[in-house]
Image 1 (cartoon, rainbow, N blue to C red):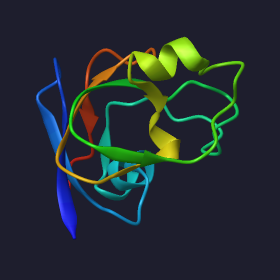
Image 2: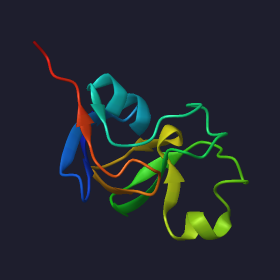
Image 3: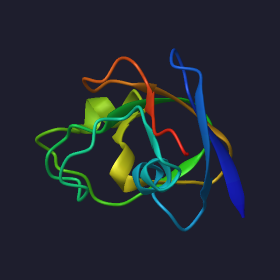
Length: 103
């Protein structure tokens, strides 16, 4: 099943299967909006806040995502898989979306 992922404030959308993490879906769609780092949950640069929707998580570095962050629905995009359409706010450094131009 595929779900729509919307990055608030950037008006950027892409689709993501429930067996893929949000970061790899964004990269696979040729879009940029979430900072890309280690892709394994250890560096913390792909932090997002889930504004709406359901998701499943895998372990995330406690140095970047503690219990308070989880309670506020702040997670790492490389560690979440959608279970519904998602609306996200990027907490990382990129503040403007960049998209590849296809010729």
